[in-house]
Image (cartoon, rainbow, N blue to C red):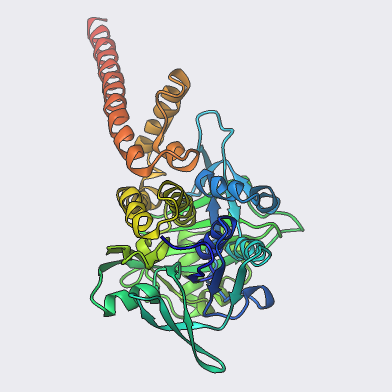
Length: 445
C-alpha cells in the first residue's frame, strides 16, 4: 500500500489532471502536478484550438464533489437543443429533452481549465510545476526525467498518473518499454475554428442552442460564448471536393461558404482570415491496453482513451474517470496495486461504448438531423418519454443528463429501440391501412 505521505505525480495539468489533483489532495496525498506548457493563466490561448466544451451531467457531478460546479456554471451558457441550419429555408429547433427543460452547457475549455488549476493549486500539499516536458519514466520505481528551460530535471514519485492527453508522453514511455499496446484510428476529417462576433452588442444567433449546419459529408457547429460571440467549428474532409485541401484562395473560400453556408457569411466578417490562419486539427480515437503497470503508473482521460468530440463527452468522460478512480481507491483502502487494475476493469467497457457512440453521432449530426425520417423518429421518442416517464429515455438524455454507465446506456437503448421500432412500424401500418381505405372509398365513389 502507498502511504499517504508518498507523493503522487500527475503528468498534465489539463482538465483531467487538475481534477485528479483536487481529488487526491482531498484524500491526503501530496501531489506534484507537472505541465509541459507555461502557466496558461498568464498567457493567451493558442489560435483556433479551443473547441468549446459541452459540459453535461457527468462533468458536473465530478465538479460538485469538489465544490466547484456552482462557480463554473456562472460562465456557462445552457443549450437546450440543436438549431438546424439548412442551405435554404427556415431554421429548425430540436429539443434535447422531451420536456425541453434540460440543457448541455457551453463553456470555454480554457476558462474551465484555469478554474480547476486555481482550485488544485490552492489545496494543501499540491505543487504545480510548469515548463516541464516528460522525457523519461522508469515504471518500476517512478523515476521521472523532464526537459525544462533550465535543463534536465529528475524527480521521483510513488505513483505516476498520465493525464496528458491523446498524445500522452506517459503512454509513449510505456509503449517504448513494451508494456502496452495502442491503436490510434484517425478520421479522414479535420477541424478548424471560426468566429461569429456579437452583432449590435448581442448574440448574432440564438444563444440557447447548439447550432448545426449539416451538409451530408461535412458540417459546421457553433457554440455560444459569454462575450456574446460564437465559436464555430468546421468538421470537413481533409481531401477531395469540399475539403480543407480544396479551398486555398479568398475567392474560393467566399464562394464555398456563400453556396453551402449562406447565412454565416454576413455574420462572420473575419471568415476568410480565420479560415486561412487557423490550423486544421486532427480527429481520432485512441485505444490502449493495459492502462496501468505495476501499480505505479496509470493512465486516465484522453491519455488512455481519447474519443472524437461528436457527443460532447470527451471532458465529461475524463471527469468521470477521476470519480471512478476515487471510488476504487476507497474500495481498495488506497492500495494502488489493487485500485489501478480495478479502475481499468470498471471503465474499459464504458469508454469503448462512448467511443462508438461518438463516431455514430458524427454521422447523425452531419447527415441525419435534417432528415424528415430522423425528425419523425425523435418526435416519437419524445412522445414515448412523456408517456412512459423514467421507463423510456432517449440515448441522448441518458448520455448527457444522467450518470448511467455508458455501456448500460447502449444496452438499454437497444432494448428501447425494439419498442420504438414496433411503435413506428405499427404507425406505418395504420397509415398504410388508412390510405388503402381512402383509396377504396374513392374507387367506390
